[in-house]
Every structure is written in C-alpha cells, then in structure tokens.
Length: 228
Image (cartoon, rainbow, N blue to C red; front, side, top):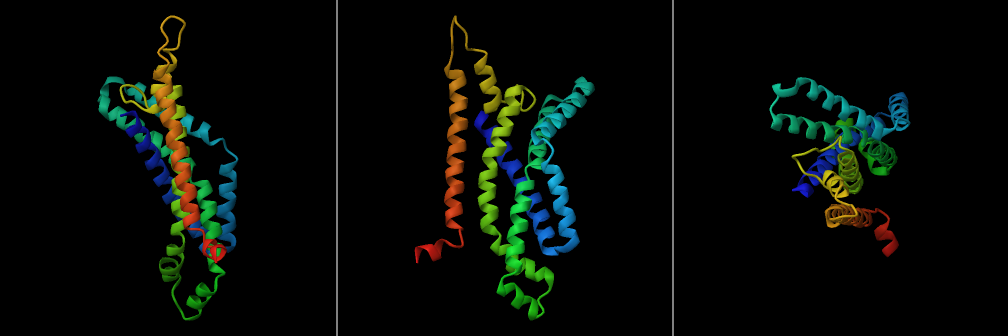
C-alpha cells in the first residue's frame, strides 16, 4: 500500500512536470527571439530558488489551512487535498529542467533541413510543430519522464519522512520509514520496519534509473551511426 501511494505521487508529479516543461520549452524554442529570451530568464530565476523549500512551504500552508477548518472537513477529503497538493507542489517545481531540454531540442530541430524544407513549401507553423517537431521530441520526453519519476518519489519520501507529506492513516514509504526509525532502541529493536521501506525506495530508484539509461540509448539519434 505504501508503494502504491509513493509510486502514484511520483508518476503523477512526473507527468505534471512533463506536460508543463514540454509545453513551456517547446513554445519558447519555437517562437525564439525575445519571447524565448524572456521565458528562459524566468526559468533561470526559478532555478535560483530552493525548490524543496517551496514544496515544504506550500505543504505547510495547505496543512495549516486544513487545521484551521478542523472538523468541518471529512477525513477522506482532507487526505485527498493533501495528496493532490503534494504531487502538484513536486510537479510544479520539477519542470524547469524539462523545459530547458525540450527548448534545446526544438532549437536544434528548427535548424534541420527537413524543417527548412517544410517552411519553404509553405507548411504552417502549427503543422510544422505538430507533424515534424513533436514526433522528434518523443524520445527526449520519454527519457526525462523516466528519470523524473525517481526524483519525485525521493522528494515525496523525504517530505513524508519529515511528517509534512503523506501522513497517517495513508501509508507511504516515507512515513513507514519514519515509523520504523522510532522502533530502533536498545530494548527491542525492530530494525526491519526501517530497512524494508528504505530498501524498496532504493530498488525502485535504481530500477527506474536503469530504465532511463536504456531509453536514452534507445532514442539516441547517433546510436545507429556509431553501430555502423
């Protein structure tokens, strides 16, 4: 059950970051000029902010608001709001790298001969993006999405471990690890309660990183040239 919650938050946050980052980076790279410069300066500013602190502040603010409402809200509604807030906060600060990657890919593709040929025969900018640019962005998007999931899972586990992410009665690997930590003592140490969730986190992150590396090799445009 804890794995289901952690993976749901990780996948949802990564999907949100993928959508925002792809749309933002593709638009900036496709428009170019001053629009691209202004949008990328905004990304640079956001990169300078401590992302984990922003997630913590948002989670604390929502939890404080829910505490002020008190008994006027059903427990399951409160849990749902906390869950949605957490994945939105993690996904909302994880799209910056995606935007830079996609923007660079779009700028590179715009200089390719097939885009210049499409522009020369009068293909509209919308069709240029939909028919020629977007299919060539599938590889980078898939690779980054695979690598973004471990980061989101780790962020969720860290926040839940601190008690400001997923909280009881919902389980997650983070709050299960926090519960297991309290069971380490000199009288009756139940060490497996800490080792089990930490091991599952490590194995999941390792597996997803291997998957990301495999996808990077699979979609590498220079792979066929190296093999030949």
